[in-house]
Amino acid sequence: KIQAGVKQKSRRRNLLLILGSVLVTILLFFGGRWLVDYFYYNPAAGNQLVEKDSYIFNRQLLNDLTEPNLDLKSYQISQSGPAAYDISEIYRRPLQDSGTVTRNYQIEKGRLINPTVSPFDSRDLDGFFEALFSRSSESSGDAEAARQNLRENLKGLPQSTYLTVNVTFDKDLSFTELEDWKTYSAPQAEARWYAIRTLPLAKSGSIVTYPPVGISAFQRGRAVLSTKENKQLAEKYPLLLENNLTSQQSSWSEEKKLTTRLHSTFSYLLDQSDFWNLYDSAKGLSTPTVTQSQLQEMSDYLAKNGVKFYGVTLELSVQELMGLLDQNDGLDLVTVTGVNVFPLSGQHGQLPDVSHLLKE
Figure (cartoon, rainbow, N blue to C red):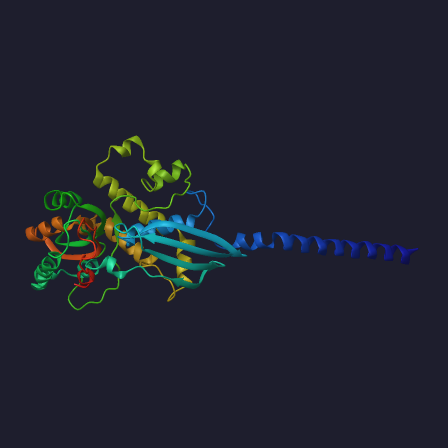
């Protein structure tokens, strides 16, 4: 009887082990992907501010700081496996109806894997790199010679041509001074991006690898994302989201709105450790133009020295650019980064080659 009882208990235990193994296998088969996804970064997930695709939200904020001339037109995030995602971003240049820049890459288990990235055109930041560290007007007449050369090149263009131009100044300006300059020197131009002083001018011979950083003149070129109402975060990051603007904030000056949005963008991005870990895992492959540590140092500099502007990206006509060059009011460097020739009646087939403009 004792042996029979032992055998019966053993059979029950074995049966329970078999049933448990089957149950675990079923759970792993159907829930393993969810379990893996839970422990790794999911770019399609939401966060405290957006319902979904928080990665794209963060990317757009970073683009506001680092990309003067590209607007996000569309994007796609698709899951290709457990904790694996394919991401495609398509960007458009503001003065071009055709011609896009595409970024395609993968995120797998919280890391960027085999990115095949079409890089942004470094020409978009031409002039800002140089002016961030030194000023041409302080060392030689090269800046004036370059402006004169640009005048000559502009003469062959139709007056209907519109240009994207990076302008840097012979001294740093406050926002009020910048707006006054634009009012009197380029009243018809549209400001797209402001280059912000984030470190002091470099000493002669020193090597600094910091990239130019600025803020878009308006919250432009963003893919539409569904945002959440979060009063606590709206107070922590004021003006980060357009739909969180209070009646009091609406009455603020444009300078206060811009600088508040800038500080909120810095603060929010610095808190996104999972986002930055993606790029830390892909060093040498697909790093952004600015790192988290650099962003922190820039934020500290701004907190100590305030917000000053050393340049601006403008959209304007050939005629207005010629007038701007003739005035030479506080200019240092003027660099053309985009040309869009609108053919007028009778000009078809005889539009000028503008490639030399972008090389000068």
